[in-house]
Image 1 (cartoon, rainbow over the protein chains, first blue to last red):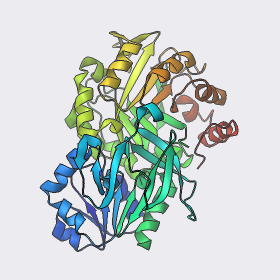
Image 2 (spheres, chains in turn brown, yellow):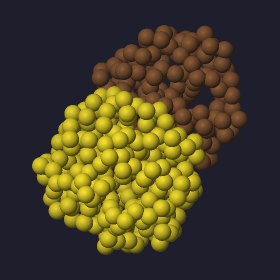
Image 3 (cartoon, one colour):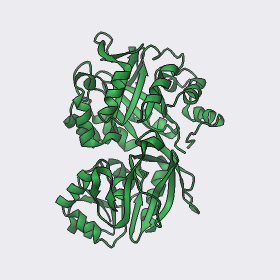
Image 4 (cartoon, rainbow over the protein chains, first blue to last red):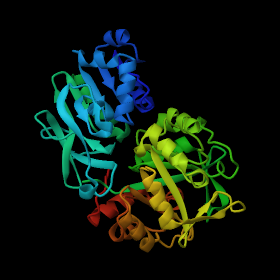
Length: 191
Length: 252
């Protein structure tokens, strides 16, 4: 059973359709006790970091995530919230991955948000050089835990990170067509 | 490298896809979810659904088809037409849309842009702009109600950008449906002064029009309707054509 964290940050429709098509059982919950019974945790999110952290705290999901020992997959904002801190609203995040989420510099990249299909460098993976769908104005810098990177307007950043039992995915696999679906299912089945 | 986006636009009237010439004489083109799947399979990069009756008739988008579309495709799509409040937008997002696009209601009450951005984030809020000459028009879905606004194009573009919009769809009304190519000079000027993504709309008639707009302006995507619906251009063929000119394109 896959537990999808529901904290009022974005719709889960596409993720649900994706899991259903692949016959993976899931539940959507904001209740840490229920989520604790799941084998794996999906942590999606779109929108504002400050707002999302507030919601997580209200539902005591921040503590659940920090102490979680199951595989956790943070998608987009879910990935960024795994960090120590975000420049978005100068928000203190979950502090799981010791990095600061930074804002794209508009002088350098010209257009923010980074929106659309971009290729990732994922060495020795079948997903290397494939296009995935990105939508974000802030990014996780490259670090020891970067497993796939992406480049936008000369700025490199983490597309996929792996730190202990935590995975972070900056793009939206659930919105990246067939290849995105293959990626998400591969990750969920393997870990 | 970030790919240039090819975006089919599906005009919706009463839950069906329709197409007219210069916003007139609408003709039935089919079921939204079916067409969405068809375009998604051809590697369309995203889809725009525009409820052309919603705004002039002052009613909100009927969202039953939005859910159906969301269940059928796994690429992003936006919904436009008649969204006038945060509450209405919320329903559209809950039905599965990734972005909403606002046009006339933002002209009537620009604060709406800020409210939507504050609640859903810039990335989810697209502003549709109908331009003729250097003027901005409202209610273009119904020619009897179409009216010129007080805004000049560049003033309005600056305004919506300041208010936090995440993307612009610039529709050249004089080009729309005429198949003479995108309004490249204007789009070039717009894409030079903006720091958010810009999508070109109106005028696509052949593959070269797409090549020219990507080569000669800095737009991030090109939107078209009738050339795709009539199968004059197949998206998968168009993408191979553009990739051959070294335009960054996602082929599959």
